[in-house]
Length: 74
Image (tube, rainbow, N blue to C red; front, side):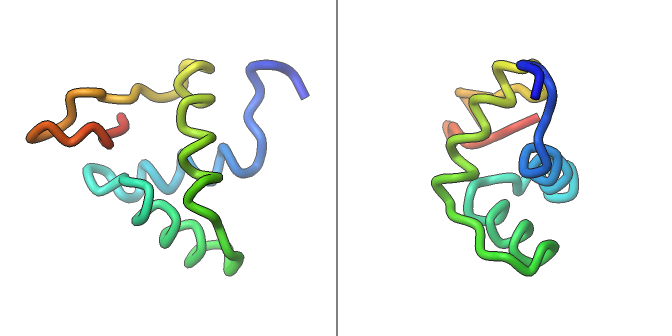
């Protein structure tokens, strides 16, 4: 797979972020993915993929966040 191509999990994670909007934190993302796929998803998997998606330029991690919460993705 090419360096900038997205895998299935990355695609699903991006869709979950879009569906959750401002509630796209790691735990709601895990629950959303599990609900949509019917498969167990680890929080570590979600957290480890987010910086990779940022590096690929498909999302931005807001390190300041709302009310100082550094878990906001756009």
